[in-house]
Length: 71
Image 1 (cartoon, one colour):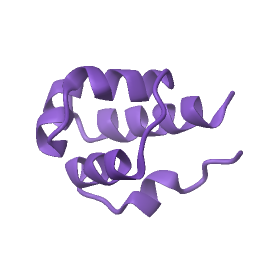
Image 2: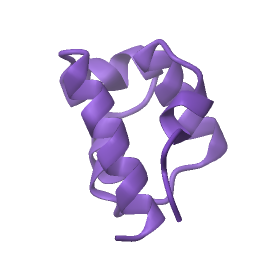
Image 3: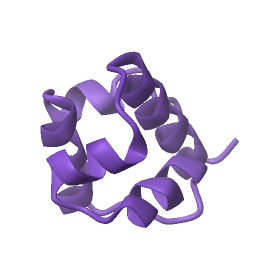
Image 4: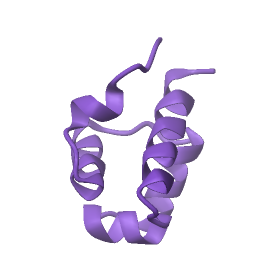
């Protein structure tokens, strides 16, 4: 599994663990729902800015999202 897919799976797990839909996370993060969908599937490379926005939407630091992601 490549790093984009691993990161996407991690974001999805964190999102669902908080009981958020993709649409709710997108709203909280100030992003479009389709962007969240692409990131979670690993079909889009996320930027640092995008990661920070998603982290804000999840109420956590970006470093927490990256925790335990192995290359």
